[in-house]
Length: 386
Image (cartoon, rainbow, N blue to C red; front, side, top):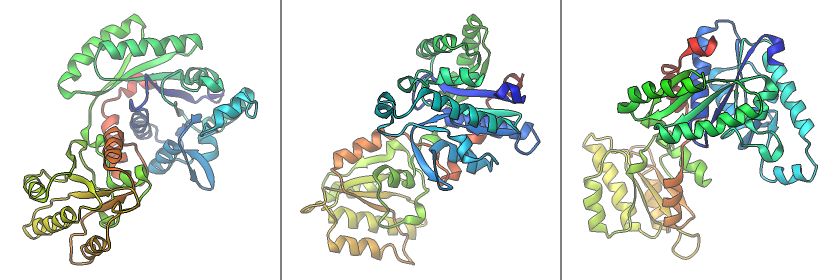
């Protein structure tokens, strides 16, 4: 359908999860919009999605919302996210509730609609090229249906990245999908030149161009307090105005020691630490609140946050005195230090935070802006559009 309309369709896939497909897509869309002046010249879709939300009254993949709303694309949501695979869908597919043909028809119809007025359509996949095989719609097959050329993304070094790319190249070959090029993402800055030199040599084996080597951007790996709210399905008890403040994962600490030791630690803390402690630790809570106010009076932007946790029984929730102290510091005239209560064990919270990978969302436009601008500058648009 894309070919018939005259639009160029590019399918974005990766070697595995969390490699940076949406970030690359953001850079692509921004760069293409700069280079293709006509309104609506760039369209975006995600043929098969998993994690979804409701936008304009319909369920759509979460990444579709980010790209559409950030760039103000005129595409209709119904065309941008034709097939969703929520929990339970795979069993329903096996049982015959959903069919391969119905999925293919929906994907092709959406592609035709997106391609109608566009010069370039960016289609983002889900995970590696084999994801979706259980419902007979893996990324390589979808790209083949659409007549799309694939851009493959891999992370990091040489050996492992090339090995993973080879596996995905074989999937593309199986479905007759041309690889438009490769992007190597999240590269250590001091290795960019080396990675570029050797990948250009390696990719000559496949007669495939290197479309970009993107250095790691640490800001994109920093979760915000809004991310914490979504991760644990809670709201800030205080400090809601700071929910889009970002924190380094390395600055998240468990505060399980005595008060004197905590006071020593917090006085030497870097900017924007996050402390996780049990909800019964009224002493640590008060010490944290007082330290935030003291730093503010001294003209320092301490920017720390506190997470109280514990199972909602017995002493697992903050007592009334602690809650009143938190609310008092949340009033006008105070710093309004961010404080959470998360009804989980401390180790569960720490584990979840350590495992968490921040994702783009339309609420956090600062992160979207950084992603779009950072990735655009490292992509070879002459090669992409050739």
